[in-house]
Image (tube, rainbow, N blue to C red):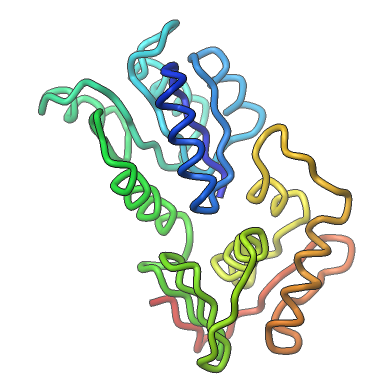
Amino acid sequence: MQVLLVEDDNLLAEAVVVALKRQNFAINRVSNGKDAMLTIATAPPDILILDLGLPDTDGIELLGKIQARGFTNPVLILTARDSVKDKVVGLDSGADDYLPKPFDIDELLARLRALERRLSKTTSATISLGNVTLDTNTHQLEVDGSVIELPRREYMVLKALMESGNKIQTRESLENKLYSWGEEISSNAVEVHIHHLRKKLPSGFIQTVRGVGYIIRVSKAANYQ
């Protein structure tokens, strides 16, 4: 899950970036509206975290511009403006959530997980496909009732595939979900993660679409709890 943080407070931004990476989000950060516009135009994030008090523009104005250009993914406003009127203006301007500063990082993470579920077919934290269950709150995988430990990036790959059942995920789209800007990516990183996952999952659970990417084919019995 790719998150873009638009925040000019360096200390706050660094704390948020560290916390989100620990929770398996791929997060990038810019500090002004101009860079946010460029980033969203070239590589739209899955979720946008937007501060309103930016040095070069007002966040509400920026929100209107990016939505006018077709950005429809969830937006969480993060701001020191905490009056009821400010919240109403933010939500009426198209934001999906509004979190006033100061805030608890656990609350931010919970709100991001809720927005993340809106992007997928899930309505709660648990995805069950046959005898495979993934809990996106605890990051726990169970196969036939047995708990299996997953490294961070293997978990992120499996989560992306299970949330998008019957939809092909290209290598490039998976890389975007796994890595933030500046992180070194080996040419076969996704293939290696898929290889290790297949050893832990039922045979044929993850299928290769040659020359395109990977898919988990979901039957009507799939359970998105």
